[in-house]
Image (cartoon, rainbow, N blue to C red):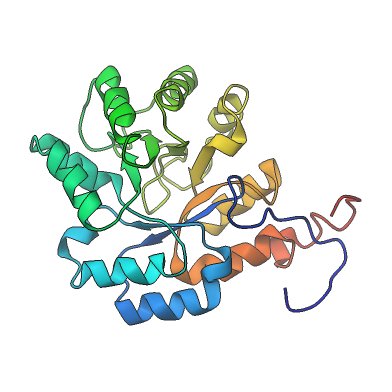
Length: 256
């Protein structure tokens, strides 16, 4: 950090396994990615190339290499995995990951229906090739999953080999663990946390109010995902109590 301030909470240092920030790149140019990393790279843990954007991104390999030059893992959005799967191209998906040096893979079923045992089978297979993130929750706002089912699915996917489970919210933050208004389904979140360790969950939280909720609930080292590149530094400031929303959160804590 640039100067000393007392009562700043301890952020886990990179490479970290808890306190992750996953940034969603929905189409940055190579130069924009370089500019973004020039100021934010110390705080970025993972970059997701959102949904199917990697299919239509020019100079994709060069762009991925920009992130990798900072030792930041890149992965394709789960929607791309589903696009390969529904076309019976699972082996092609593995080949594409190898071609682009992608060692993180997201397994999701937000847009298609996959028997859960089959989904866990894909997780297990992909652990042979790298780190697997599995996404739980539907992109369909009308499809409400009860808390016990979230817990059951998350536990099974972690047992199948996923390093983290991602709590679905889409890039807008209005489905899954959120209501259509973006409001957190607090009872759902808190029930999940009674059974699934917080350090194993990445909460998709594109909106500031959502990020604040999880920082207040779990602490500065909560795993957060679907963060816009332009929100990276504001989020890091909020994590350590240097934004109005969290200004008083850590001031009276002895262990800071």
